[in-house]
Length: 465
Image (cartoon, rainbow, N blue to C red; front, top):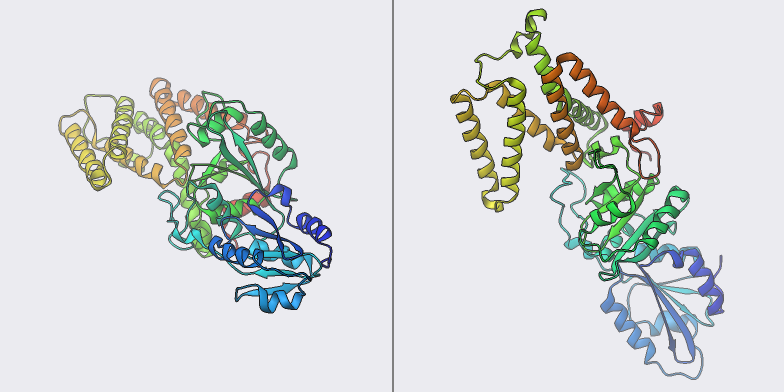
């Protein structure tokens, strides 16, 4: 579509091309340059404010009784080096999403692209939780406009829409719904926007958690998380291109990803920054750890109770020195001890946190074994499970596994094999009955089974060209 010399027509065409009504971060500034009306579009968070302010000041101070031509504006008037005149609406729209400012002048059938970019994301640091060995080192901050700019930096498409809402009678917090038109679930999108608009609360005191519990309430007895939180803009952008919907909240250095399936909570950036064979191995290890974290200690109890019936190879799992407390109770006690050490480490200054955790674990474990309260094997298995919990990319999913493991240990300790079978059935029913925020199966692509999607999640294939 060519640029019209009528500014009203050009504004209408340009707004349609950039989805102006659905993008809160696109700034429109209308002003006059002599006898000509002008309009400038720029991306908030990416445009250099100081440069554009200087350009505005220069243009608005011009005095002329006749219109300026395209050549005059390009060669003499705009006080900036990187200026390019385009005559296609689509080219100008793409330029804005890359970070340039678009100047439209009445009576001129060209749009002037001013490449005055700013890079606030260069100041952001890699998040503490979602670390990667390779790849980008930037992370989301607590400022929504910067988070939007980090995503815009990776997806320069007019189909990327960001709609802003205000939530909270007192807090008036900014909530941004980010999605790709044509890729996301329209029904889910409208449901999310309607729930946010109808939300009547005093404020988002706990940011994302307050919003999640009010618009997507879950069953109190179900520990599995239904919403995934990401602190990395590269992972968030990848999820957008998969058809997911992001929610950005003011004062929250992470974004909410909707919908999220169980298998999504095992994915992380390192899966894709490694070569295919290494990424596949990396995923395999995480899946094995996820299963071991749930069934290792209950299965150990069964092995100990049936040691005489099992082959000789299982002797390596037997307890060498009996302790005063039965094994199931030892495991539960160690669960609480490890939790106490973890909480203490979190509340200790960073300089001392690691030391306190290591010293506490060594002293408690060694004393408990020496006093005959706990078996050395119990301490070993619980130490392994604690490490495996931190190997999970998602901390909430790791805690859900921990809670259900305690249930399995109790049932197995009380009812032996029948207890383990009943506990496993309970976990299965819990997973099958859990639904994502759009009402679909939490265990997709396993239930319902989708071989292509399961293969894509399990095997790290070559990235598409």
